[in-house]
Image (cartoon, rainbow, N blue to C red):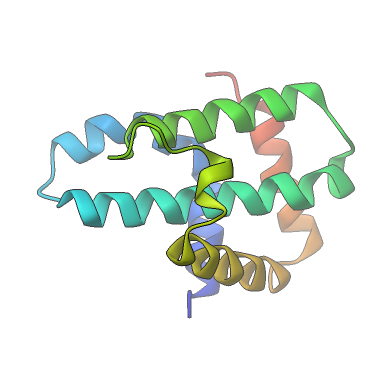
Length: 124
C-alpha cells in the first residue's frame, strides 16, 4: 500500500510533472516503469478531481489546470491514444486509484484544501 508521505509528496509537487518529459529523458526508466509512474500520477490527479470541488467549490480555473496536468502526463504515456476515460478500464490504474483515494482519506482536510488551492493558483 502506498505510504501517506508519497501521496502528500505527489500532490504537493503535482505540477512538477509538467516537466516529466525532461525528467524521464535524463534517467534510465523503462517504458513500462514510466507508464506505471504516469498512471500513479494520473490516479492522484483523479483524486484531486473528485475531492477538490467539495473543498474549494467548483472552479473553471481549477478544471483547466487539472486538464493541463493530466494532458501533460498523458503526453509522456507510451499509448498515445490513452485518455483519462480509457485508463478507468485499466486494472492497474484502478488499483492505483484505490490506493490514492485511501491515502487521501488519511490527509487532513486543511492539507487537502491547500493542495487544491495550489492547483487552482498554478500559473504554468
